[in-house]
Amino acid sequence: MPEMNPMAVENSNTPEGFDEWTEEQAIALASEENIELTDAHWEMIHFLRHHCEEHGTTCSARLVLKAMTTQVKDRGGKRYLYTLFPRGPVVQACKIAGIPLPPYSLDLSFGSVH
Image (cartoon, rainbow, N blue to C red; front, side, top):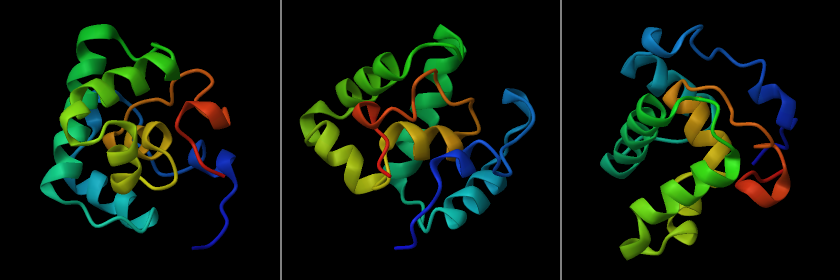
């Protein structure tokens, strides 16, 4: 897997606004991350988008990761999330879901792998 600058996520082709996101964009963004989207990926992507609609897009990386982990607790929690988003569930999932990266999401302890 090629080494990637974590700041490249900030400069990727993410949608301009939350409401302008499309599933076609998600597929393209996932392809950039070398991820082929499965039903499990879509579940987390739609979960994140719904979570952001309810709680806003400014919640911290810690809260986003906690919500994601709770959603898949019965499947292995954080360990399971890393099988879906190997470079970090918060960073990769938010990028693909077309939502802004939460504050401090590039902190290695909050679901990003560099």
